[in-house]
Amino acid sequence: MALDDPAERKAQLIGELRGVVRRLEAAAQGLTAALRPPPGPAADGGGDAAVRWIERRGRRHANLSLASVPLDLAPILKSALFDRVETVVLTSATLAAGREFTFLEERLGLDLEPSRVMVREILPSPFDFAAQCLFGIPTDLPEPRDDEPGHDAAVARVLLELGHAAAGGVFCLFTSHGALRRAADAVRGRIGGRCPLLAQGEGQRDQLLRSFREAGSAILLGTDSFWEGVDVPGRALRVLILAKLPFKVPTEPLTAARLERLAARGLDGFTHYLVPLAALKLKQGFGRLIRSKTDVGAVVLLDRRVVTKRYGAMILEGLPRAETAIGQWADVRDACEEFFARHGIGAPA
Image 1 (tube, rainbow, N blue to C red):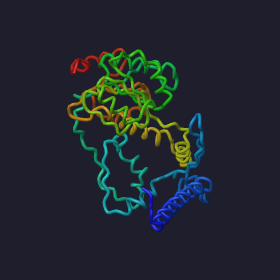
Image 2: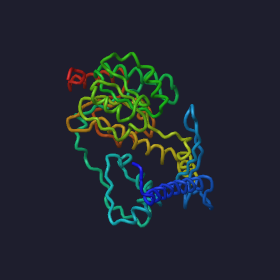
Image 3: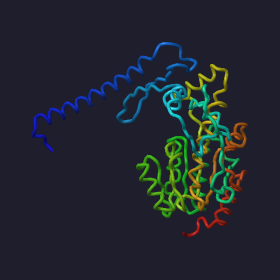
Image 4: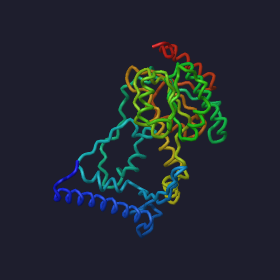
């Protein structure tokens, strides 16, 4: 609506100009932080150490973005949040890595003196995972790092066979968009009309989840943003497939910088950073399946490293105590089918 009063019009323009000035100042501050780091040594991660990089985004209309991220949020969170309030209560199903809170406390600055952490307790789940969930780990599938094409083929095979056995209701989580696209291409047209295929990147996240819930027999493929915050209780989700262990890519700028800092301190970055982070992420992904006391279903992890590598025990330690099936894929598939038959999964609703 047009403003007839010149004074009101002037006030509106001044307000708009002030908004433009604030945005320009914020952009200038961002550029300064990215292009002119604060003086002083940053190798130990102390002070105002930050990771800075240039990133190219987009394919057809590519653009460059400058990023500057604090290397360590712990001192920032302690001074700006935890030291400013009397009480902070932290609760979540995914705070502990390997049934310990050390990794979280270090990342959040809760271990910095003076520490006020009073209680570290893992409470029992309200769900009966031993009765509600089967956890399968095939040990004869190719490892994703050693044989990517072979692992891709195995993921597609498991998707099709479990999708058929459970009559859909399958949610498969990937760690990269490339692996997701390859799986979608491999199974598209082979799953039958009863099980619509929904893939991240082919629709908005909320729309895909809504379609998955409403269909009741769909197969949904998702990557990073689907590992948490997805809530599909009931029969619509009855099979969860985790394509591989969710390790961070060590060459990503922020991850690489944190690994370098740990190495400078004489610590192994894989053991002290990548493994605990993967354990928490895997627990988040696992938690997508059982969302109520009446949910039942199977979780299948297609990465045998969790049982063949020494770090696997720490990762498995933090997962819910479900019924397990570990062995050849044929045996794991048979265990899944027996579990489905026992709970009426795959039969008409």
